[in-house]
Image (cartoon, rainbow, N blue to C red; front, top):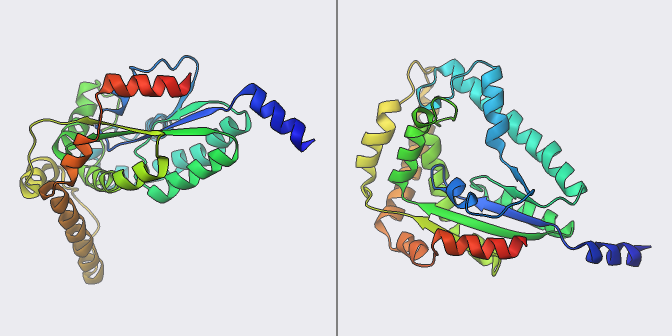
Length: 264
């Protein structure tokens, strides 16, 4: 029976999974629009997240959210992520459906765990990594709510800082892990390289107001976390490693051709 199942699986062809990686505002959606996806599903936690925000009557302009709205948005994201992990993804895998997972892939551990689960389920797995400058990531996020006419969400800039740092840090590990099934695109241009300037322009204007007072211990812990993040980001901005990512990337059209061949 096992051999028969293996033969049937080979006869029907392996399902495909395309995992996206990139900070908010990197341009993943732009590259996706160039793909010949046909009837392949695109799974995006943002869709459920936005629906839950609307149901809870929480603004989609989260960069200007109140403390109560920030709390509600955290719960909504947790619920949307749980639905994706425990319902939507398992159902697609059980049905052997090919799909695109549109996410930041900020967590290397979670992404590689998913990759291994998919491969064990008989999937071919490919990663599209989209890099962008930190300033562009923050600006795209800042403008997203207004440009969409209030239909899309803008995140807290501090969340974008964390995501950008994690995704950028994951470039080489992802490239090594996925091997030939990896392609990167870089959407870059003239951008600020000094983190203090970037923070003053894109983060400080949206500093949360009316927050609950922290204990001295909590305040010290938050300060150390911020300093660690800022030091890591400034190291990236000052190093040649970001340029290495750009140099090893291809144009969006070439990436689309490579991915279309994988999906076909």
